[in-house]
Length: 116
Image (cartoon, rainbow, N blue to C red; front, top):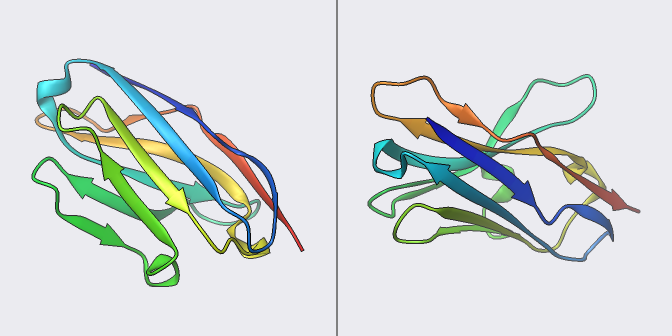
């Protein structure tokens, strides 16, 4: 089992920056990749960015150039640096861990609100 705890959300003005953190604990060796999803009211949860154990990254098109995902080498933490934030980035952001031979683990979510 892997437990995830997010932090770093909050209220920011458009154009500002936030850095989300996700601390992982438990069976870290079974983590294949970690990522950030977000869900706005009335919308489906969507992948924002992910990073594999090997360091390969993926970004959704709307986040390329604005967001940067990074991780500790031991896969005990993953971060999302968000710059040039827009009101449409407002959502609950969830940390995700893809695991070998187990269902994914999810954090409880952290709210990001971007005011115009």
